[in-house]
Length: 397
Image 1 (spheres, one colour):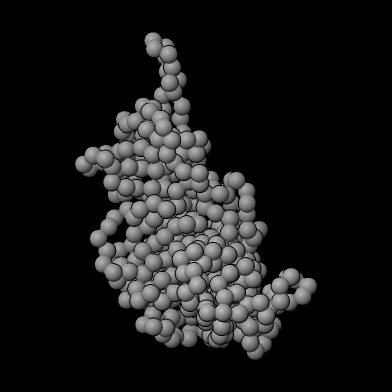
Image 2 (spheres, rainbow, N blue to C red):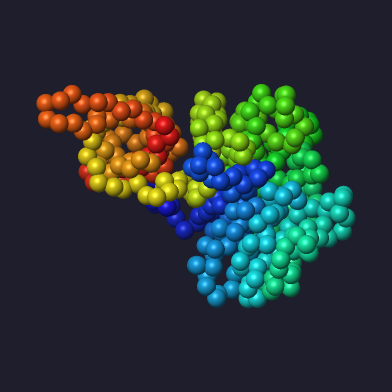
């Protein structure tokens, strides 16, 4: 994991980690590896240390492994918010290893389904482990579990974090959640389709003045009006509109379609940033830290590592964090087939695109060939010289 872009935040920080960002079904296609293929799961750690989990997709398994490494045999207590009962938001539950340890305690929250009735969440939980759907009986899960039903517009507090629930427009129902911490406000509103005025207004109220607004962006604006109308999802354009109207500071595009390759998501992000400056595309391993009225973002580095020996002259063009175009001659010192680490006098924006024109090595006196790449910025650190930035990029083509 890369280091933060900036430092100096106080201890009053809320930390949001993305463990699963894909919608509908997990993917393992190489074309989707950069943003990730696990279905929805986020981890929110409040400034006082209270742990929240937002949804239980396949990303929950990875989070469970991480917690097992960190906590060992020490007890874990967490509050788990399930937005709705579709498979991609609950399928990680049987594979969440902390549920099999008796010293742990988990509090689950969701709504009463009209199709299931009383104790809907508990029924869904138990059905995941029922024969013949899973080989291990529910009795193997020895952690303490508590289930709470939440209704539309409910507000309550957990250790100083104020939570608000609002119903969204999605088949069979879905909740959006607002978490107001001492460090700022995070709104998680996945799986919602615009077009119902009452629910659209409810979403704007939920997102009002949020520091981080995580919103469904599974489909294109064109799909929403044609082939995917009524399927219960949103687009980057609808998310931008809500962010603008609600005074949101940072918009996170989430729930990527399983058929959306990394290049497609790159294009979605590019389009969104033309309409709203502070937009991020959710990526597995991405961490957002909220404190002192600003957000720091850490992106995951390329799988397999960036650093290998290399020394190639290159010309890099792109845009700074402030949106200014730049062009700079530099040297690629660390290079692989997947990416590179370069040193620049400019500081580009995370998740922005760089154009890299590189001279390939040749014998003395011979003309050098020029290779052209597109790179995606995943890492920013102070460079070895003053006012220099070390930039980690992943090649996209």
